[in-house]
Image 1 (tube, rainbow over the protein chains, first blue to last red):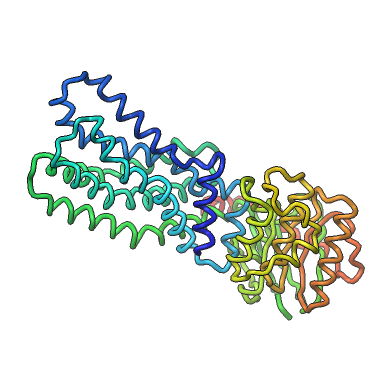
Image 2: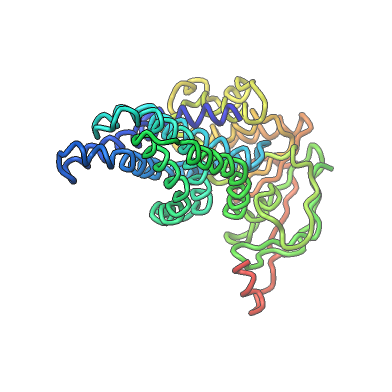
Length: 218
Length: 205
């Protein structure tokens, strides 16, 4: 299992692996927003947390079709399916590798991007915390979507359409937590809801992903 | 006996392709599947490998004894030959890859990214994967595609060494592998009768 994680991370770092793509996309979205809404810093400060969450979500979406499609194309998914690894472990590792290469960099760079949107000072901790709690769910749900669409040629758009509605709860509570942080309100309730959603998806979705993938490999 | 297929009926895309397939593979034995394109050799091998369920019948084998190699080699273009082999060795809980590299004469290429290999070299690397898994029963689908005559001989000697160690293999192929000891199984007689209207529903199952 560790071998699979190391291989996926190594592939992401090598040429064409897509490491940093999500981060660069996030940066571009965040720099485009002030052009779109104008340079009033009070307005930006008010919408910053929402924009950052939306940007992170879209950046995550960008790389979902790589999770399983590349392995399906070159036949390694068939070979992995016949290897002594349970399918649930394979999809969990794939989701973890996706989070480490896409979600974690977004979390780490979010404060810098917050600066670009003049995010008020008390908002940084809750923003980073909400992304740290929420992005694993994005990767796990995304892996489920990737398992549903594996084998479809150019299934990227369908994947986005399937996955975005499933992202709604994470977005609601993640953005709410970041917004309350900006306003200096208590963040306990959205924090617990967000953590609960993430734990629930991590506990349940790998089984669904594995079942779907077994059907798609037939 | 390491693999026993009894009265197996298999389908591709909901349409029955073969029915009543039965054979046994002994330890140290080799079976070559032959039949025209589209008859269901690949589907049969994928069913035996556990990638899809049969419509009827049984496959009796220890799932931890099988290793499957399909049309694609499952190589990563940006990883080197050594990294590719090492990955598969680790997935199967092994560490030793030098013997596999020697058997398929990949020694000069170990540090080259797999994406820069020729089609025949990629196939040799894909076949070397079988050796690093250390599994006794090889399920091979057209293993000699894009290999030259030397490499086919290399493959045949690797299979022979595998059989001598007590392993066994089931191969679907069209060409002569130079393995006179292998039993030939013609798949043609197991062809399923033409699909009936009732089978239409199964396409959606």
